[in-house]
Image 1 (cartoon, rainbow, N blue to C red):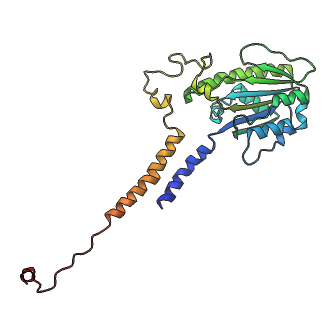
Image 2 (image 1 turned 45 degrees about the horizontal axis):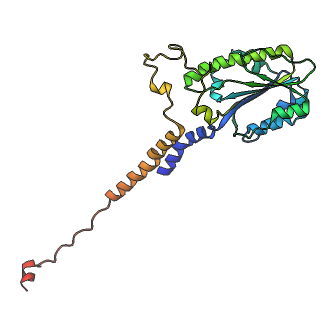
Image 3 (image 1 turned 120 degrees about the vertical axis):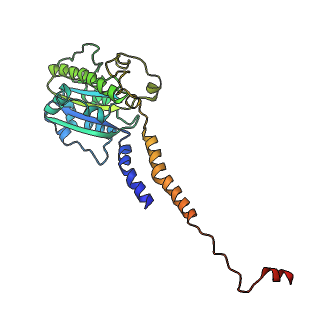
Amino acid sequence: MVARAALLALIPFTGVLAFSNTIPFVAWSSQSSDLLNNLSLGARPNHGALLESIVSNGDICLYDAVVVVDHPGLRSSDLRTLQPSCRLSQIIKDAPSARQLPHVERSLGSSPDIIGFLMSRCGSLVVNVNPGSGEWILETDKKHVLTVSMPPVEGSTRYRKTMMVEHESLLSSELDKLADFTSNHLVIYSGSHIPLERRQFPPLSEYDSPPEAGVLYDATSPKAGILQNYQLLTPGLITSLLVVFFILIPVVMLGINALASIQSPLRSEAPKGYSAQEKKAQ
């Protein structure tokens, strides 16, 4: 009974761990696309399989431009913090064809070389876009593949939400520029894992620099507590606490109760008329 209760308590957290190694995947096109409408997802969508399914479709070369947006550290919860009225949400909402997958598995080094594939198959020209850093143009009568490298998003929940507002503005601005060049394009927007060396030695940039005082939080405010600035309850710690409180402690208590319920055998009484002194004298 105790084990059953523990398993039931672990079920909700097991669902959370199932999405710990996933990223969001969003794709849309400026025109109605059978490529996206007939996209095969499978029981457990995989980022590499989705890209391979897209680039292997013969309609991929019909687009004048294919935009591949890589956003390191992006989570589905980050996209949910965006306002429905923001420019990026409106672009996706108004797209004739769009697919949105909040949880897609992605392993390091498992994604196909979509850039090289489009270059060899469609003769596309590569244009590297660094949002907010300069102008870029597309050549007429040429197909292009645009690689957009977004700044990484990391940190506390409040900081991520603030950064997502800035990143959304940068990305939507580049997409508006693209719409001015061509009305026939495909956009693939997905997250990626931040490399380990990036986490250990984060280079400072205009996107990763600490916020100005009073912008994101107030150090003197009672709301700026340690739980809002640091992640104390990690998935591993929560799992350990659940195992201890719902499995180990009940088992220990059950053993203590079992030991406490053990009773010593009844002492046998001497027969009637038996005298220890007489027995000793004999």
